Amino acid sequence: MPATRTTTPPHDLIAGIAPAQLAAFAARESARFAASRPKSLAARAALADSYLSGVPMHWMTDWPMPHLPLVAHAKGARLTDIDGYDIDDFCLGDTGSMFGHSPAPVAKAIRRQARLGLTYMLPSEEAIAAGHLLCETFGHFQWQIATTATDANRFALRVARAVTGRPKVLVFNGCYHGTVDDTMVTLQGKKTITRPGLLGQSTDLSKSAVCCEFNDLQGVALALSQGDVAAILTEPVMTNSCMVLPDPGFLAGLRDLATQHGALLIIDETHTISTGHGGYARVHGLQPDMFVAGKCVAGGMPTAVWGMTDAVAGRYHTVNASRASGHSGMGTTLSANPMQFACLVATLAQVATPAAYALMEKGAERLSGGLADVIARHNAPWHVVRVGARVEFICAPGPLMNGAEAAHAHQPQVEAALHTALLNRGTLIAPFHNMMLVSPATKKGQIDRLISSFDEILTALFP
Image 1 (cartoon, rainbow, N blue to C red):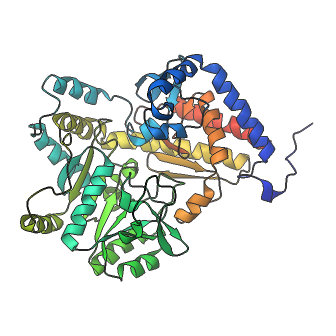
Image 2 (image 1 turned 180 degrees about the vertical axis):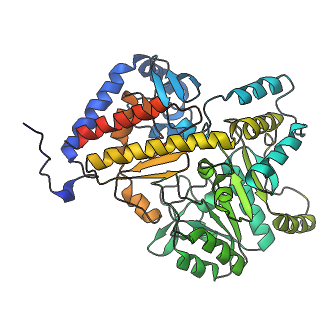
Image 3 (image 1 turned 90 degrees about the vertical axis):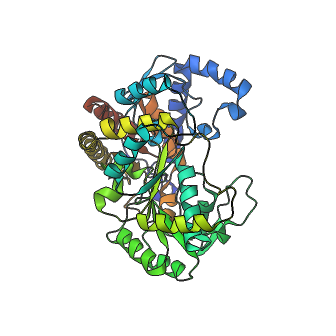
Protein backbone atom coordinates (compact mmCIF):
# COMPACT_ATOMS: atom_id res chain seq x y z
CA MET A 1 0.00 0.00 0.00
CA PRO A 2 1.44 3.43 -0.91
CA ALA A 3 2.35 5.80 1.93
CA THR A 4 -0.18 8.51 2.64
CA ARG A 5 0.55 12.06 3.65
CA THR A 6 -0.24 12.94 7.24
CA THR A 7 -3.61 14.56 7.86
CA THR A 8 -2.24 16.99 10.43
CA PRO A 9 -3.81 20.43 9.76
CA PRO A 10 -1.40 22.70 7.86
CA HIS A 11 -1.25 25.26 10.66
CA ASP A 12 0.18 22.58 12.97
CA LEU A 13 2.99 21.65 10.58
CA ILE A 14 6.60 22.73 11.10
CA ALA A 15 8.07 23.75 7.74
CA GLY A 16 5.52 21.43 6.17
CA ILE A 17 6.37 18.48 8.44
CA ALA A 18 4.08 16.84 10.99
CA PRO A 19 5.53 17.48 14.48
CA ALA A 20 5.32 13.82 15.50
CA GLN A 21 7.07 12.81 12.28
CA LEU A 22 9.84 15.36 12.93
CA ALA A 23 10.28 14.38 16.59
CA ALA A 24 10.58 10.67 15.77
CA PHE A 25 13.04 11.34 12.96
CA ALA A 26 15.18 13.64 15.13
CA ALA A 27 15.27 11.08 17.95
CA ARG A 28 16.36 8.29 15.58
CA GLU A 29 19.12 10.37 14.05
CA SER A 30 20.36 11.62 17.41
CA ALA A 31 20.55 8.08 18.80
CA ARG A 32 22.32 6.87 15.65
CA PHE A 33 24.96 9.57 15.98
CA ALA A 34 25.53 9.00 19.71
CA ALA A 35 25.95 5.24 19.25
CA SER A 36 28.35 5.55 16.33
CA ARG A 37 31.01 7.81 17.87
CA PRO A 38 32.22 6.34 21.19
CA LYS A 39 35.65 8.03 21.07
CA SER A 40 34.14 11.48 20.60
CA LEU A 41 31.65 10.72 23.38
CA ALA A 42 34.51 9.84 25.73
CA ALA A 43 36.35 13.01 24.70
CA ARG A 44 33.34 15.09 25.75
CA ALA A 45 34.07 14.33 29.41
CA ALA A 46 37.72 15.29 28.99
CA LEU A 47 36.73 18.61 27.39
CA ALA A 48 34.31 19.30 30.23
CA ASP A 49 37.20 19.10 32.72
CA SER A 50 38.87 22.17 31.23
CA TYR A 51 36.47 24.22 29.11
CA LEU A 52 33.42 26.30 29.92
CA SER A 53 30.34 24.32 28.89
CA GLY A 54 32.72 21.64 27.64
CA VAL A 55 33.75 23.55 24.51
CA PRO A 56 36.78 25.77 23.76
CA MET A 57 34.55 28.38 22.06
CA HIS A 58 31.06 28.94 23.44
CA TRP A 59 29.19 28.87 20.12
CA MET A 60 30.34 25.29 19.52
CA THR A 61 27.41 24.34 21.75
CA ASP A 62 25.18 25.40 18.84
CA TRP A 63 26.08 22.28 16.87
CA PRO A 64 22.91 20.16 17.03
CA MET A 65 24.36 16.65 17.44
CA PRO A 66 24.36 15.01 20.91
CA HIS A 67 28.09 15.64 21.28
CA LEU A 68 30.79 17.12 19.08
CA PRO A 69 32.80 14.95 16.72
CA LEU A 70 36.50 15.70 17.27
CA VAL A 71 38.50 16.23 14.08
CA ALA A 72 41.65 14.16 13.60
CA HIS A 73 42.70 15.80 10.32
CA ALA A 74 41.36 17.67 7.33
CA LYS A 75 42.48 17.99 3.74
CA GLY A 76 40.79 19.48 0.71
CA ALA A 77 37.04 19.19 1.25
CA ARG A 78 37.13 16.27 3.70
CA LEU A 79 37.40 15.86 7.45
CA THR A 80 38.25 12.70 9.36
CA ASP A 81 37.09 12.47 12.98
CA ILE A 82 38.71 10.53 15.80
CA ASP A 83 36.16 7.72 15.38
CA GLY A 84 37.49 7.18 11.88
CA TYR A 85 34.62 8.63 9.87
CA ASP A 86 35.45 10.45 6.63
CA ILE A 87 33.16 13.46 6.23
CA ASP A 88 32.42 15.52 3.12
CA ASP A 89 32.88 19.05 4.43
CA PHE A 90 30.53 21.66 3.00
CA CYS A 91 30.81 23.86 6.11
CA LEU A 92 34.51 24.56 5.47
CA GLY A 93 34.97 26.45 8.70
CA ASP A 94 31.91 28.61 7.96
CA THR A 95 33.90 30.14 5.05
CA GLY A 96 37.28 30.19 6.82
CA SER A 97 38.44 27.26 4.68
CA MET A 98 36.35 28.10 1.63
CA PHE A 99 39.18 27.16 -0.73
CA GLY A 100 39.67 23.81 1.01
CA HIS A 101 41.62 22.72 4.07
CA SER A 102 45.36 23.43 3.94
CA PRO A 103 45.74 24.38 0.27
CA ALA A 104 49.22 23.26 -0.81
CA PRO A 105 50.57 26.78 -1.59
CA VAL A 106 49.40 28.04 1.81
CA ALA A 107 50.83 25.06 3.70
CA LYS A 108 54.13 25.60 1.89
CA ALA A 109 54.11 29.31 2.76
CA ILE A 110 53.47 28.50 6.43
CA ARG A 111 56.38 26.07 6.56
CA ARG A 112 58.70 28.58 4.93
CA GLN A 113 57.67 31.52 7.12
CA ALA A 114 57.77 29.43 10.30
CA ARG A 115 61.54 29.20 9.84
CA LEU A 116 61.80 32.98 9.50
CA GLY A 117 59.75 34.10 12.49
CA LEU A 118 56.09 34.31 13.37
CA THR A 119 55.51 37.89 14.50
CA TYR A 120 57.69 40.96 14.98
CA MET A 121 55.51 44.10 14.57
CA LEU A 122 57.35 45.05 11.36
CA PRO A 123 56.43 44.28 7.75
CA SER A 124 58.19 41.67 5.67
CA GLU A 125 58.97 41.98 1.98
CA GLU A 126 55.87 39.91 1.26
CA ALA A 127 53.78 42.79 2.60
CA ILE A 128 54.58 44.59 -0.67
CA ALA A 129 53.39 41.69 -2.79
CA ALA A 130 50.30 41.24 -0.61
CA GLY A 131 49.34 44.90 -1.06
CA HIS A 132 49.58 44.66 -4.83
CA LEU A 133 47.55 41.45 -4.87
CA LEU A 134 44.84 42.95 -2.65
CA CYS A 135 44.40 45.82 -5.11
CA GLU A 136 44.45 43.50 -8.11
CA THR A 137 41.86 41.21 -6.53
CA PHE A 138 39.43 43.53 -4.77
CA GLY A 139 40.10 46.94 -6.30
CA HIS A 140 42.24 49.95 -5.52
CA PHE A 141 41.91 50.65 -1.81
CA GLN A 142 44.43 51.78 0.77
CA TRP A 143 44.64 48.67 2.94
CA GLN A 144 45.07 47.67 6.54
CA ILE A 145 45.48 44.17 7.96
CA ALA A 146 43.53 42.82 10.94
CA THR A 147 43.19 39.41 12.55
CA THR A 148 39.41 39.02 12.32
CA ALA A 149 36.64 40.62 10.30
CA THR A 150 35.11 41.75 13.58
CA ASP A 151 38.18 43.89 14.20
CA ALA A 152 38.23 45.10 10.61
CA ASN A 153 34.60 46.24 10.79
CA ARG A 154 35.16 47.86 14.16
CA PHE A 155 38.17 49.83 12.87
CA ALA A 156 36.38 50.82 9.65
CA LEU A 157 33.49 52.24 11.68
CA ARG A 158 35.90 54.20 13.85
CA VAL A 159 37.43 55.79 10.75
CA ALA A 160 33.99 56.53 9.29
CA ARG A 161 32.92 58.31 12.45
CA ALA A 162 36.19 60.22 12.61
CA VAL A 163 36.03 61.54 9.05
CA THR A 164 32.32 62.40 9.07
CA GLY A 165 32.03 63.65 12.65
CA ARG A 166 28.82 61.66 13.01
CA PRO A 167 27.95 59.11 15.72
CA LYS A 168 25.76 56.44 14.11
CA VAL A 169 26.09 53.44 11.82
CA LEU A 170 23.17 52.22 9.73
CA VAL A 171 22.82 48.42 9.62
CA PHE A 172 20.12 46.04 8.47
CA ASN A 173 17.79 44.00 10.62
CA GLY A 174 19.20 40.50 11.07
CA CYS A 175 22.69 41.48 9.90
CA TYR A 176 25.90 39.94 11.15
CA HIS A 177 29.25 41.73 11.07
CA GLY A 178 31.04 39.76 13.74
CA THR A 179 30.80 40.74 17.38
CA VAL A 180 30.82 44.49 16.76
CA ASP A 181 28.66 46.01 19.48
CA ASP A 182 27.30 48.78 17.27
CA THR A 183 25.73 46.30 14.85
CA MET A 184 23.86 44.34 17.52
CA VAL A 185 20.54 46.11 17.07
CA THR A 186 17.16 45.03 15.77
CA LEU A 187 13.76 46.49 14.98
CA GLN A 188 10.81 46.57 17.35
CA GLY A 189 8.11 47.73 15.01
CA LYS A 190 9.91 50.63 13.38
CA LYS A 191 12.05 51.45 16.42
CA THR A 192 15.75 50.53 16.70
CA ILE A 193 16.51 48.65 19.92
CA THR A 194 19.42 46.68 21.38
CA ARG A 195 19.15 42.99 20.51
CA PRO A 196 17.57 41.35 23.55
CA GLY A 197 19.81 38.27 23.54
CA LEU A 198 23.11 40.05 24.19
CA LEU A 199 25.08 38.95 27.22
CA GLY A 200 26.37 41.58 29.64
CA GLN A 201 25.15 44.53 27.56
CA SER A 202 25.18 47.74 29.61
CA THR A 203 24.52 50.50 27.07
CA ASP A 204 21.67 51.42 24.75
CA LEU A 205 23.05 50.64 21.29
CA SER A 206 20.33 52.65 19.56
CA LYS A 207 22.34 55.73 20.52
CA SER A 208 25.11 54.64 18.15
CA ALA A 209 23.18 52.67 15.50
CA VAL A 210 20.02 52.81 13.44
CA CYS A 211 18.40 49.69 12.01
CA CYS A 212 16.52 49.35 8.73
CA GLU A 213 15.11 46.44 6.78
CA PHE A 214 17.18 45.12 3.89
CA ASN A 215 15.78 46.06 0.45
CA ASP A 216 13.96 49.08 1.93
CA LEU A 217 15.49 52.13 0.26
CA GLN A 218 12.70 54.38 1.54
CA GLY A 219 13.54 53.43 5.13
CA VAL A 220 17.24 54.00 4.50
CA ALA A 221 16.56 57.43 3.01
CA LEU A 222 14.49 58.41 6.05
CA ALA A 223 17.21 57.26 8.46
CA LEU A 224 19.95 59.10 6.56
CA SER A 225 17.88 62.30 6.40
CA GLN A 226 18.44 62.77 10.14
CA GLY A 227 22.06 63.73 9.35
CA ASP A 228 23.68 61.67 12.12
CA VAL A 229 24.72 58.53 10.20
CA ALA A 230 28.45 58.17 9.53
CA ALA A 231 28.23 55.00 7.45
CA ILE A 232 26.01 52.30 6.03
CA LEU A 233 27.59 48.95 6.89
CA THR A 234 26.17 46.06 4.89
CA GLU A 235 26.82 42.77 3.25
CA PRO A 236 25.74 42.85 -0.39
CA VAL A 237 23.71 39.71 0.37
CA MET A 238 22.37 39.02 3.85
CA THR A 239 24.05 35.88 5.19
CA ASN A 240 24.54 34.13 8.54
CA SER A 241 20.76 33.84 8.57
CA CYS A 242 18.34 32.55 5.99
CA MET A 243 20.02 34.13 2.98
CA VAL A 244 18.40 37.25 1.47
CA LEU A 245 19.34 38.55 -1.97
CA PRO A 246 19.28 42.27 -2.85
CA ASP A 247 16.47 43.53 -5.05
CA PRO A 248 17.58 44.89 -8.42
CA GLY A 249 18.80 48.43 -7.85
CA PHE A 250 18.96 48.17 -4.06
CA LEU A 251 22.76 48.26 -3.72
CA ALA A 252 23.08 51.02 -6.33
CA GLY A 253 20.41 52.88 -4.39
CA LEU A 254 22.47 52.58 -1.20
CA ARG A 255 25.45 54.07 -3.02
CA ASP A 256 23.38 57.01 -4.25
CA LEU A 257 21.76 57.65 -0.88
CA ALA A 258 25.08 57.49 0.98
CA THR A 259 26.58 60.05 -1.39
CA GLN A 260 23.51 62.28 -1.22
CA HIS A 261 23.50 62.35 2.60
CA GLY A 262 27.25 62.50 3.22
CA ALA A 263 27.59 58.99 4.69
CA LEU A 264 30.15 56.35 3.75
CA LEU A 265 29.22 53.01 2.25
CA ILE A 266 31.09 50.07 3.83
CA ILE A 267 30.72 46.69 2.10
CA ASP A 268 31.51 43.67 4.28
CA GLU A 269 32.39 40.71 2.03
CA THR A 270 33.47 38.28 4.74
CA HIS A 271 30.86 35.77 3.53
CA THR A 272 30.02 37.04 0.04
CA ILE A 273 33.62 36.62 -1.07
CA SER A 274 32.10 33.33 -2.28
CA THR A 275 30.42 35.27 -5.14
CA GLY A 276 33.37 35.21 -7.51
CA HIS A 277 36.92 36.45 -7.98
CA GLY A 278 37.17 39.77 -6.14
CA GLY A 279 33.92 39.23 -4.25
CA TYR A 280 30.42 40.52 -4.89
CA ALA A 281 31.48 44.16 -5.17
CA ARG A 282 34.02 43.44 -7.92
CA VAL A 283 31.75 41.02 -9.80
CA HIS A 284 28.78 43.41 -9.74
CA GLY A 285 30.64 46.71 -10.06
CA LEU A 286 29.77 48.19 -6.67
CA GLN A 287 31.68 51.27 -5.52
CA PRO A 288 32.06 51.21 -1.74
CA ASP A 289 33.97 53.85 0.20
CA MET A 290 35.39 51.13 2.42
CA PHE A 291 35.75 47.39 1.93
CA VAL A 292 36.09 44.55 4.46
CA ALA A 293 36.88 40.87 3.96
CA GLY A 294 38.03 38.15 6.31
CA LYS A 295 37.87 34.43 7.07
CA CYS A 296 39.35 32.82 3.93
CA VAL A 297 41.50 35.61 2.44
CA ALA A 298 44.67 33.95 3.78
CA GLY A 299 43.58 30.35 3.20
CA GLY A 300 42.46 29.77 6.79
CA MET A 301 45.21 31.67 8.62
CA PRO A 302 43.39 34.18 10.92
CA THR A 303 43.44 37.28 8.74
CA ALA A 304 41.11 40.08 7.68
CA VAL A 305 41.64 43.06 5.42
CA TRP A 306 39.98 46.45 5.31
CA GLY A 307 40.59 49.25 2.88
CA MET A 308 39.41 52.72 1.98
CA THR A 309 39.36 54.78 -1.19
CA ASP A 310 41.97 57.47 -1.76
CA ALA A 311 39.35 60.12 -0.97
CA VAL A 312 38.49 58.59 2.40
CA ALA A 313 42.19 58.03 3.14
CA GLY A 314 42.83 61.73 2.55
CA ARG A 315 40.11 62.65 5.04
CA TYR A 316 41.50 60.11 7.50
CA HIS A 317 45.01 61.59 7.32
CA THR A 318 43.63 65.07 7.98
CA VAL A 319 41.70 63.94 11.06
CA ASN A 320 44.50 61.73 12.32
CA ALA A 321 47.05 64.54 12.07
CA SER A 322 44.89 66.82 14.21
CA ARG A 323 43.99 64.42 17.03
CA ALA A 324 45.67 64.36 20.41
CA SER A 325 48.50 61.89 20.87
CA GLY A 326 47.70 58.53 22.41
CA HIS A 327 45.65 55.48 21.56
CA SER A 328 43.55 55.66 18.39
CA GLY A 329 41.33 52.75 19.43
CA MET A 330 42.50 50.72 16.41
CA GLY A 331 45.03 47.93 16.02
CA THR A 332 46.08 44.71 17.74
CA THR A 333 49.58 43.43 18.42
CA LEU A 334 49.40 40.28 16.31
CA SER A 335 47.81 41.90 13.26
CA ALA A 336 49.91 42.37 10.10
CA ASN A 337 52.31 39.65 11.17
CA PRO A 338 54.58 38.05 8.55
CA MET A 339 52.70 34.76 8.59
CA GLN A 340 49.56 36.61 7.46
CA PHE A 341 51.41 38.22 4.58
CA ALA A 342 52.93 34.90 3.49
CA CYS A 343 49.49 33.28 3.48
CA LEU A 344 47.79 36.25 1.81
CA VAL A 345 50.28 36.10 -1.06
CA ALA A 346 49.92 32.35 -1.45
CA THR A 347 46.11 32.49 -1.34
CA LEU A 348 45.54 35.47 -3.63
CA ALA A 349 48.19 34.47 -6.17
CA GLN A 350 47.77 30.70 -6.32
CA VAL A 351 44.57 29.55 -4.59
CA ALA A 352 41.73 32.08 -4.94
CA THR A 353 42.17 32.36 -8.70
CA PRO A 354 39.56 33.00 -11.41
CA ALA A 355 39.97 29.36 -12.49
CA ALA A 356 39.28 28.16 -8.95
CA TYR A 357 36.16 30.32 -8.72
CA ALA A 358 34.90 28.98 -12.05
CA LEU A 359 35.25 25.44 -10.70
CA MET A 360 33.50 26.36 -7.45
CA GLU A 361 30.64 28.04 -9.29
CA LYS A 362 30.11 25.01 -11.52
CA GLY A 363 29.93 22.69 -8.50
CA ALA A 364 27.64 25.03 -6.57
CA GLU A 365 25.28 25.22 -9.53
CA ARG A 366 25.14 21.41 -9.59
CA LEU A 367 24.45 21.36 -5.85
CA SER A 368 21.75 24.05 -5.86
CA GLY A 369 20.00 22.50 -8.85
CA GLY A 370 20.05 19.05 -7.27
CA LEU A 371 18.68 20.28 -3.95
CA ALA A 372 15.95 22.29 -5.69
CA ASP A 373 14.92 19.21 -7.67
CA VAL A 374 14.65 17.16 -4.46
CA ILE A 375 12.53 19.84 -2.80
CA ALA A 376 10.24 19.98 -5.83
CA ARG A 377 9.86 16.18 -5.99
CA HIS A 378 8.79 16.04 -2.34
CA ASN A 379 6.56 19.08 -2.70
CA ALA A 380 8.24 20.63 0.34
CA PRO A 381 7.43 24.30 1.01
CA TRP A 382 11.15 25.16 0.91
CA HIS A 383 13.51 26.89 -1.51
CA VAL A 384 17.19 27.13 -2.45
CA VAL A 385 19.37 30.24 -2.79
CA ARG A 386 22.87 30.46 -4.29
CA VAL A 387 25.48 33.20 -4.40
CA GLY A 388 28.50 31.97 -6.32
CA ALA A 389 29.98 29.06 -4.37
CA ARG A 390 27.59 29.54 -1.45
CA VAL A 391 24.35 27.51 -1.43
CA GLU A 392 21.57 27.44 1.13
CA PHE A 393 18.32 25.51 1.39
CA ILE A 394 15.72 27.37 3.41
CA CYS A 395 12.89 25.51 5.13
CA ALA A 396 10.25 28.04 4.05
CA PRO A 397 8.87 29.44 0.81
CA GLY A 398 10.88 32.17 -0.88
CA PRO A 399 12.40 34.37 -1.96
CA LEU A 400 12.94 36.26 1.28
CA MET A 401 13.02 40.05 1.23
CA ASN A 402 14.55 41.15 4.53
CA GLY A 403 15.80 40.18 7.97
CA ALA A 404 12.33 39.92 9.50
CA GLU A 405 11.30 37.38 6.86
CA ALA A 406 14.62 35.54 7.30
CA ALA A 407 14.06 35.24 11.04
CA HIS A 408 10.54 33.92 10.48
CA ALA A 409 11.82 31.37 7.93
CA HIS A 410 14.41 29.98 10.36
CA GLN A 411 13.24 26.58 11.65
CA PRO A 412 15.66 25.44 14.40
CA GLN A 413 13.95 22.10 15.11
CA VAL A 414 13.95 21.07 11.47
CA GLU A 415 17.45 22.32 10.80
CA ALA A 416 18.91 20.56 13.84
CA ALA A 417 17.42 17.23 12.76
CA LEU A 418 18.61 17.74 9.19
CA HIS A 419 22.16 18.63 10.20
CA THR A 420 22.54 15.56 12.41
CA ALA A 421 20.98 13.35 9.75
CA LEU A 422 23.33 14.68 7.08
CA LEU A 423 26.35 14.07 9.31
CA ASN A 424 25.14 10.52 9.95
CA ARG A 425 25.27 10.12 6.18
CA GLY A 426 28.74 11.61 5.88
CA THR A 427 28.15 15.30 5.17
CA LEU A 428 28.81 18.36 7.34
CA ILE A 429 27.08 21.70 6.73
CA ALA A 430 27.22 24.94 8.75
CA PRO A 431 25.63 24.71 12.23
CA PHE A 432 23.83 28.05 12.45
CA HIS A 433 21.75 27.75 9.29
CA ASN A 434 21.68 25.56 6.18
CA MET A 435 24.72 26.98 4.44
CA MET A 436 26.96 24.91 2.17
CA LEU A 437 30.13 25.92 0.34
CA VAL A 438 31.73 24.30 -2.68
CA SER A 439 35.53 24.57 -2.69
CA PRO A 440 37.95 24.00 -5.55
CA ALA A 441 38.70 20.64 -3.90
CA THR A 442 35.05 19.54 -3.71
CA LYS A 443 34.43 16.56 -5.98
CA LYS A 444 31.34 15.86 -8.07
CA GLY A 445 30.83 12.66 -6.08
CA GLN A 446 30.68 14.61 -2.82
CA ILE A 447 28.03 16.92 -4.25
CA ASP A 448 25.98 14.00 -5.52
CA ARG A 449 26.24 12.20 -2.16
CA LEU A 450 24.90 15.29 -0.41
CA ILE A 451 21.99 15.53 -2.85
CA SER A 452 21.23 11.81 -2.43
CA SER A 453 21.32 12.09 1.39
CA PHE A 454 19.06 15.13 1.25
CA ASP A 455 16.62 13.14 -0.86
CA GLU A 456 16.71 10.23 1.60
CA ILE A 457 16.05 12.60 4.52
CA LEU A 458 13.13 14.37 2.82
CA THR A 459 11.67 10.98 1.93
CA ALA A 460 11.52 10.26 5.66
CA LEU A 461 10.16 13.68 6.57
CA PHE A 462 7.60 13.96 3.75
CA PRO A 463 6.21 10.39 3.40
